[in-house]
Length: 141
Image (cartoon, rainbow, N blue to C red; front, side, top):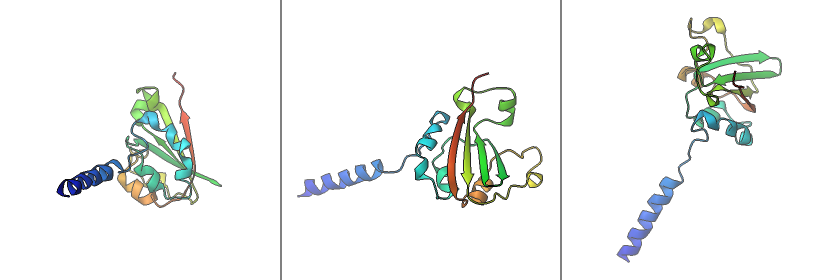
């Protein structure tokens, strides 16, 4: 009886740790999986999608075209983009369309760091509703 109880306790611990959710995107190479799993994020807050991305978003912008509000996320800094540095996989762009108007004011962002994505940005925009995901792989130059 004692051994059976130990067995079930160990089994429970192993199952519990094995069932922890793993982030969908472990590396930039995995970003296209967001499009594959798009339905998992549609009509859910942006913060749910951002939690699934492990590589740091280094560059972001926003657009409020009528009916097409979206964020553009890149995994390279502006300097890396300008110097064409990084691997082919790093040159992917993630576009996340949201339902609401994005309160993104270029003039209010830190001078020289207007395109940097921060934790504050994730908090500020995290409750916007995702309606579409688009992934573009940049061709090598």
